[in-house]
Length: 318
Image (cartoon, rainbow, N blue to C red; front, side, top):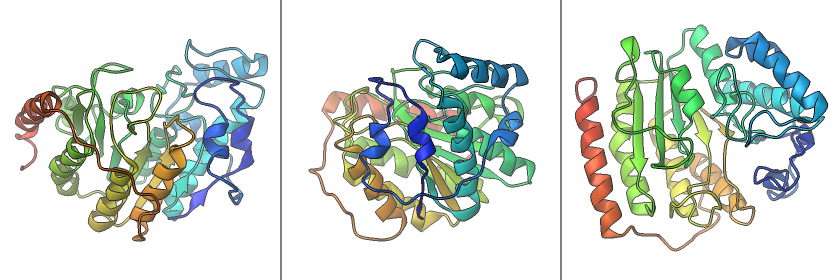
């Protein structure tokens, strides 16, 4: 897995906003890839009115919502983020993009996200007849992605995230609707969860992902679960992101990723490069002290895990 990057993503100028260009600059010098314009794919998911509204807002540098700002370069960055993610799905690579996407809905922005890069790509793959596993380990629930595929049995959405936290939702009783019932898998982590709980959630619900037997795995790779991240209260170290990469490499063949959250620019490179090393079968680049969770967090997590397994047991074996 290689990185797909282009300087167009720096044109999404957000100023002192947590989601700013330093998130990519901190990765060091990156080789630029010639990427495709993803504008023609937007209507796989987003409404025409919303696309038009985004264009207008960017041209006037207006905010799309209280959390999502724009600049003159934001529309270009957003459509090329879609294009880079689609390219990654073809090549098995990691699209290092901004703005992120997993909070975006078909008709509105949310949580720093303009267009839903992973959901557009998964929609394209599903239209091609592929069974798609979306594994979202960003510390926030990807509410846009979850809602988009909530009634689908062709796309399984698996999220590990802090609960409660923005944007709300993502609890154990949310397992899908209609033919999609059982195809939404939430592993809500209590605040204070460390490496031990995080990897327990990976191991427990990996069994569902493997039973789903996807043709391709789409990773919403967010790193804001790190213990020094600015926006959440999880305590995951860079070691776990390496282990997640290793788990994916061992259990699945066709994998690609796109960048979601992660806002501590000192630790974000450590997390990204560890994940990349894991998925490429190389030694971990950065090592941190393993984190453990307090007894109260473990007790709450075990309760939640049990409820989740009970809710999903009619559809999958544990």
